[in-house]
Image (cartoon, rainbow, N blue to C red):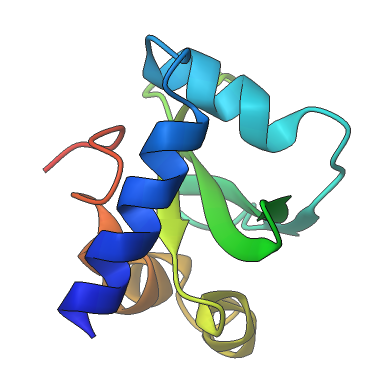
Length: 119
């Protein structure tokens, strides 16, 4: 599994070699792509999570943009995660019970894939 993930990351990184920052990668993922958003108004930490899929050289890649709430603000800070194909389904089945727990269980394990999310 790790070898497959590494190979996919290598292909993705070669495709987006011109992307210099996480913001550039986020633009690449979200451009011309509406995604599926799961809002969490009652969560203390997560405002919403939007899932995207992207076709790159006939391969499907899956991403989650997680919007963390800022204290004393209506704004949020967005981070990009490259996730597995079943992450959206798993998150959608559990986020209403606890968006935070669903995040830690299904999205957080992928924080090192793109280096665009906090540890």
